[in-house]
Amino acid sequence: MKFNKKEDGSYELDVTGYVCPHPQLYTLKSMDKLQDGMILEVLIDNPSSVESVTQACNSKGFTILEQTSPKAGVTAVKIQK
Amino acid sequence: MEGSAPAKSSKNKVYAVGVIVFLGILSALYYVSAPVYLYIVVYMWFGFLYGALQQYGRFCFASAWRDLIMVKVPRMFVGIMVGAIVLSVISAYVFVKFPGGYHTANIGPHELVGGLLFGLGMVFAGGCATGSLYKTGEGNMISLTVLLSLSFAQAIFVALPFFDTLMKKLVYVLPANVTIANLIWGHKGPDGNYHLPDPAASDGGIGFFQHLVADSLLNTVLVAVLFMIGVYAIVVRKGFLKRRANELSANADGGEVKMGLKDDVAGFWSMISASRRTSIAAILIGIVAAIQIFTLNWMKEEYDFTNFGQVMTLTTDSGNPPPESWPAKDHASEVSSYGIMFDPGYWYITTQEAMFAAWAIEDGSGGSIDMKNNIYFGGELYEKNGQTFGYPGGNAIPKPWHSPALLLSFGLILGATFLSLWNREFKWKFPTKELFLYAVLGGTIMGIGARIALGCNIGGFYTRAAFGGPGGWIFFIGMGLGAFISAKFINYLANRKLEEMDFDIEL
Image (cartoon, rainbow over all chains, first blue to last red; front, side, top):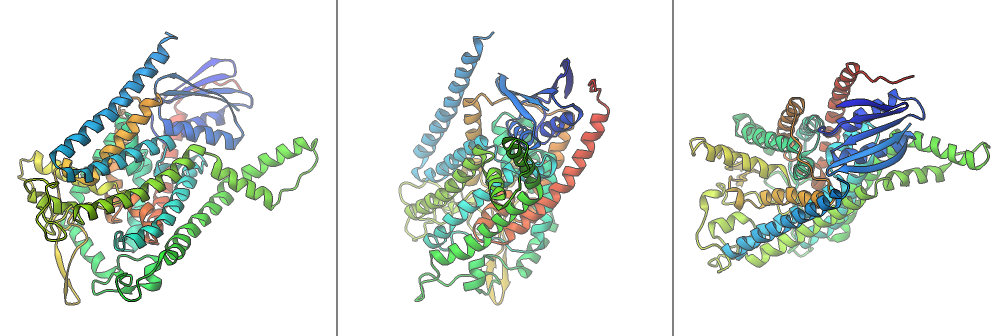
């Protein structure tokens, strides 16, 4: 698991290699550390976690800005707090 | 590099089609070997459908409790309730069409204990028994580790003398086949279990509407709806009403808005419809589960047997010599002392994996380890009220390619492989030391829990509850308690891990 700063106010969390419940758990814990307006891009290679991450973010009022597939088996979810 | 994505996508689709072609060839080989083997081929293709649907809906019972507890996401919990409701309505018809085609296991506190262990294990493992199968199909070798741990833990556990003692106590003390319809209209037989009136008798047994009201509406629909209302009230309601009030307030130029019953109804519906794909998968899985029961029962009637073990011993139901569609020679060493093998006729997961592990242990030891000397695999007769019965068990240790339910598991893995390849979601994933430990620990605890409860998340809960057995809900509650304990523990470990990380966030 890696957490990197991409640019000011924008961060990346790489949870590839992890299975449930770790990707959704670390995503929400990382979001807790961000301030309103900041962006987190999460890289996940566990399809069921993608579903849980987007739902958890929606229910917490975070905005899903984009969901892409940078390579086969990997989903990038861009979330704004 | 930009142009390579579509090329990779089409390559994945070729592999996906390859999976279908492979299963097609395998099916043809079975048919050529003996047409009656179509029976286990059908098991395999139903497994394929389950796998594809589970992969589509990310259908995993572990996430039902775990995501609800850890990240407040009710998606899978609701999906499972919807699926159970659909299956229960169809099961009312199954009971009438195939009386005696489904029996629930003994009801009692072992379901709570087994469910608790199963719930504990599945959160560590990152998937339930059937979830681990479909995730293996996605290329996830962590899930394969879970499956192997679960399989071997079960096989070893049931071969211990303790398990035979437990089984005997359960069978002597606790009644089996307890469904709501049986409690209302059935009677206790000399075996201590519940039985419905004989459909062939003058009163004609009980009908579809009686099963519908008792087993479906009372045992499944009512309980599932109550669970969903509870989840809405505890987990969803507060956040939903807050967001809705903010939206309505913004539309009313900041004016005060009051929330009422219609807002709660909207919130409840939004909870159900929040994940379209999970709900669709849940409904389709319920329908497929029912069609599987109809199809396999129809095939049994057509091929003149009630258990596939009879095909292995060339023994027809009618007593006639086996027809030409049956194999030319018997495989009698592959059945239990009852002359049968595990052939549930419906969606089941863990038993066939225990059988596979037992076969691997026996075969791997060159036959020096006998795994059949127990009730679970070998079977044993007992006396009760002056009559002789067989203990539930006698699942046998057939060769994997002769095990109908194992073919279902095999098809399930490949169904998930097919769809994940098609949708570019397939990815080989290998365990780190940390995840390997979780997988082995979780799989082992799940396996032990499944055997104590006499079923896993499918046989112990999903089909058991949907077929009118209140015991299924006991297992489900146990599963929730276990999931709660391990979720708290994993959360604690995650917090410790995060403390060691440098987040470098400007605040």
